[in-house]
Each structure stands twice: as C-alpha cells, then as structure tokens.
Amino acid sequence: MAYKPFDLTGKVALVTGGNGGIGFGMVEAMAQAGADVVIWGSNPKKNAAAEDRLRDAGVRVLTQVIDVADEEAVRAGMVEAVSKMGRVDTVIANAGVGGGAPSFSEFSTETYRRVLSVNLDGVFFTFREACKHMVERAGSGDKAGGSLVAISSLSAVDGAARNEAYAATKGAVISMIRAIAVEHARYGVRANTILPGWIATDMTAGAQGNDKFNDQVIKRVPARRWGKPADFGGMAVYLASDASSFHTGDSFLIDGGYAIF
Image 1 (tube, rainbow, N blue to C red):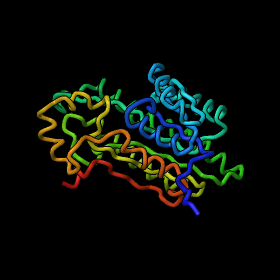
Image 2: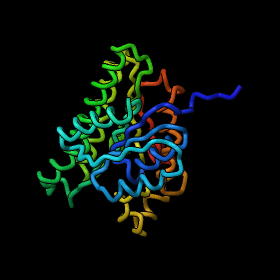
Image 3: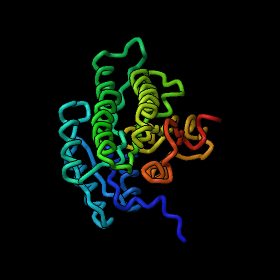
Image 4: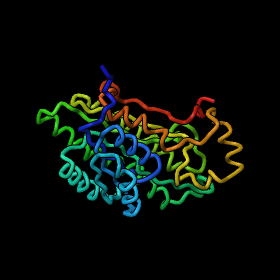
C-alpha cells in the first residue's frame, strides 16, 4: 500500500507573496502535490504570470491583488478566498520587503515603519483572519484542522547589520507563531516557521551579482551555493500535509548549513 500522507488532494493552500521567489516555489510544489492554491500578490502582472505557469497542474488557482499591510484588504481577501474555494487549509505568510540603511544610526523611521507594516503587521493580519476561519470550521465539526506557516529569516537568529528593522520583524514572527501554536492546537491548527538563509530571489538580486559578497559569504555556505525557491517546496508540502499533523510550534532553518558553520 502506498504511503499517501503527502497527498494534498482536496486541500486549499493560500500563500501571500506567492507570485514569485520562495512563495511561488512553495505554491508550485503544493499544486503538484494536488492542492488547490490561492496566490496573494500586490502586482497583477506577476499574479497572472504565476497563474499561467500553473496552468498544467490540474488544480484550481485563484489569484488576488492584496497588500498585506492593508488590514481591510486582508480581511476582505480571506473572505473572498474562502467563499470561492470553499475552505482554506494552509496559509503561508511569505510576503515581505527588505529595507536597510548605511548604518543603524542612519536608519530612517520611514523605512522602519514600511518594513514593519508588511513583514509584521501583514503576518498578524493574515494569520488572524486565517484563524477566524479555521476556528469557525472546527466549531462546526470540521476536524481537518489547518496549518499556518510564517516565513521568517536567518536574520532572526544571525546578526543582520544595517538591517535591524528586517531582523526585528523576522524575530517577532517566530514568537507570534509559537503563541498561535499553543492557543490553537485544541482546534487542530498547527503553526510553524521557516527561516530561509541566502536564497536567490528578487530581494537578493544585488548581492547575487556582487563578486565580493559571493566570495566572502556564499563560499561560507557548506552547501556551496545560493538557495533556490524550489528548495522550499518539500517543506511546504510537508507542513500542508497530514504528515505534519503532530508537528507545531517549530522553526525550520533552511540555509545550506550556513548558521552552523
């Protein structure tokens, strides 16, 4: 008999910032595992391109133009997603922005507020609305539970000079997830965090072409390469699947071994 806990057929997964980078890497893997998917992104063209790339997956795909820093947009977006897809089983809060400064003493309040609004407020709004839906489902007798996944960062545990705002948000979501995990386990909802290391995405495009950075940083990665969005597909499928039904409140560091070297 085949082992099938990783089969996501019948499940619906929503990913914020799911139209590119790590977000799309997870969306694509979950769709290939059978999940219907919802993509939240603020760029309509990128949303359409992502949907087109999933055309042959054989699953339902819904894209929504959502700015996760907008509380009302998140609330309305979740209501629409549940209405159109019937349910949402997994929510991955992946949307994020970078923003640093030449030094901490020169860090602008404007940049600080912008980073917090997306990377922390956006996660809070998204998971609050997801929990409303999942708790309501549990109250109506649906025992399928749910999975919440926050995309944190290596920056949460490794000193990120000149990126204090980004690091602060990524550390905060770990604490948020742990609290959600404890409170919502009784409803069959589990909550975990993924901490990516140096991953080749649009956010790191400048560093990817920097010979000095590649020589001094990427050569220190024991895996000897940049991470890829596809490297997160397997973890997304695991956390969205029944295989992780007893796994909650944890943090997964996916960095090619960088943090331990």
